[in-house]
Amino acid sequence: MTTQDTNEAAIWICLQQIPGLNSQGICKLLSQFGSPESIFAAPHQALKQVVSDAISNLIKKGPDLEAIEPSLQWLQKDGNHLITLADAHYPQALLEIPDPPPVLYAKGDLSCLTMPAIAMVGSRNASAQGEKNAEEFAYALSRQGLCIISGMALGIDGAAHRGALKHENGKTIAVVGTGLDIVYPSKHRELAHKIVAQGLVISEYSIGTPSRPENFPRRNRIISGLSLGCLVVEANTPSGSLITAKCATEQGREVFAIPGSIHSPTSRGCHALIKQGAKLVDCIRDITDELAPHLTHLVS
Image 1 (tube, rainbow, N blue to C red):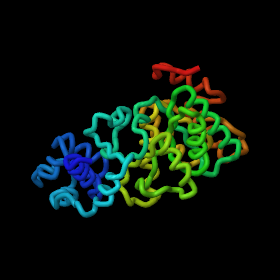
Image 2: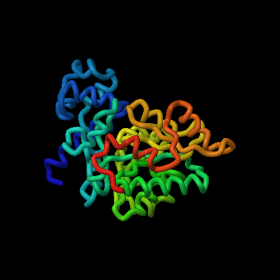
Image 3: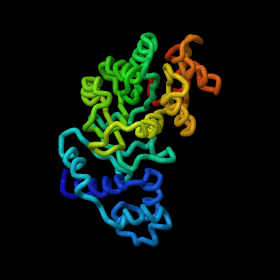
Image 4: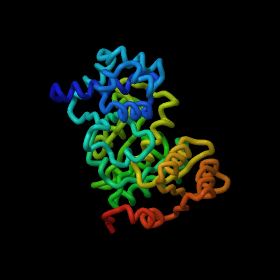
């Protein structure tokens, strides 16, 4: 990175790390003041028109350059990227959601962000058949030119990523709830390396951010936001997968669900979604026919 690039990255990361300032608040500030530099330079009274007095005081303390040093050091390494709302290659799909992440940390192939994509999510405690379904659907959808997006969790997420990677040209994006210097769950360390080699791992969380329960519902809006639709393979009620499906619905994305046994707890979430209007899926065409108007090319 050049000095100019480093300085620009630093100011964005400092803004993103202000305690209590969420992505919607940052977007409001950017809409009002235009840039992170202008936000930090704005007078206290002007800031208070957009954010709380407490957050305004934190902004007026100025950028905390010491706190962001780990993130800047990470960015110096090959293959590591910072994507901000000001970047031309910021994913267009995320600009359509109500609270796009102002900053994305990324490792791998950035071209994945320009591909038509489908989210695939499901239970961490998936059945063997559920994982098999996820892997087979991901492989088949990859052959159709779709990028597979999931959260790299155990169970269905991991199976979806593996299915995409089985295709020689398959692409997959893992949206994670930690800093990109941390692999969570640790069992997926090898999978994470494979995704970076053939796809992309992204996070809105700064380097060093550990796994926290509240991070994962937040990241789900990115999984659905990057996608044309969301396929739920297996899900309990309640579950994080249903949160992703809810985000997809709110974002105007298609929702698909694979049915299962009425006796299986991991099928109840899918059945609930189907009752609410999600499209029942039992073959690949149920998805590709629905998404065809959004795709410029389908591979037979």
